[in-house]
Image (cartoon, rainbow, N blue to C red):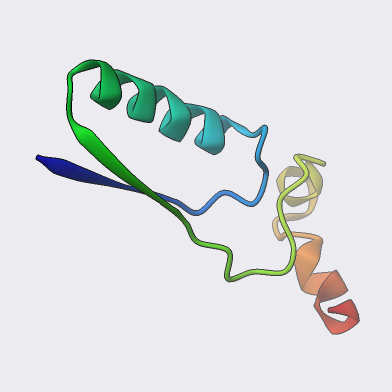
Length: 67
């Protein structure tokens, strides 16, 4: 059985990437085949700065004109 893992994380050391890697390791230990795909359709990744929590929107919306 092949299992497809799709990650939308832009941060290779982020929580989503960690979770996908954990799932991949677990699936491989169970003897299954893994196909891993990372979607990188955005040019800016979350840095965890907390701006959105303070201001109700992502600072990336202010930076979009730079990309």
